[in-house]
Length: 421
Image (tube, rainbow, N blue to C red; front, top):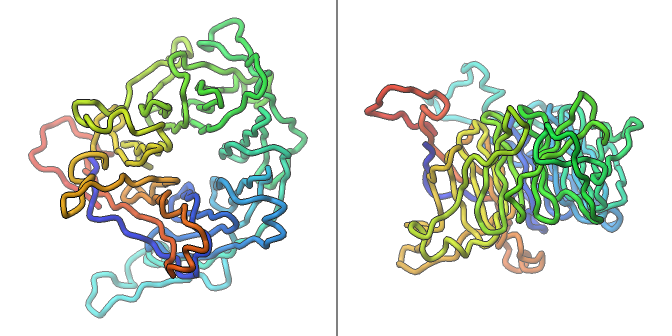
């Protein structure tokens, strides 16, 4: 069980925000998160949520690379890869500064938060870090998706290629994989798979699933599938794809490593959750996450396409957003817990209706106790408007409390439930 706690907080940048934030991505340990604007990369600490360091591109570099688009962390959080509009990958190294800590909390006398507490520094003091751009890689095609896989970075481009890049920015002699050479079938036991028999096919969104050893992918024509290596290598000859036969309007994907699930967002506003049949290797529909006309008679078919899907760090819940706005939280197997498109969320204090919150990017914090989101409406304002109004662009932080049983299940009856936040 997850519950919202209080109103969302707005994180304000201490420096003048001349560019609105466009994307947010937490590191694998979720102690840091990166915020992207069109020409700036900023690193924040999660608790407390404070800015640590920023890197701003020069006008000359922006004209060459194009604006920043997506970010992906190396598993050990020492490097960040940033894709740009003109098909470049920029590799930034995160280096510890001379001063070990940038912020250190000060508590009044008699406070239970004493400096003698074990791991006090590591848990409550923001580290001092520097950002250095170390490598630039030109892929000569628009980058549609990038995903970390152990010591490599998998990059999908609009020309239908999959690039396998090492985190030092080198290919190490490995050739890009043309998706048209990867066979696809309805299961992994088929003796022969068919190829993507048309031009301009490319991946628009993908996510690596470690427990299934493969990638859940969404193609530009709306089809979705799962690509896995049939052996230890990662070449066109060793890859095989499996189709989800019922989906033709896919928009995005997120994977749940704990329960081995793949959640595909669709243009009709529903989320279809698939698993892999162990006996045949086929993609099997597990359940759907969708609004019903009974619960949401005014909005159930007006949400637009699913825009983003994010599983919580404990893999117990999933957050869904739509193109037309709104947030909805679901349990792993389809129980709706929270939805901002109905109930008290859609009315102001005076009783009038308000427009749903539109989200352009979101990322979970440590252990799922908070969620950072970027308001698409706020991010759409121009730099000129920002200067005239004198306001700083912020990031919303939703606070959650959750049941202790979420990750510690119990089969006996419980009269009371412990909520943590």
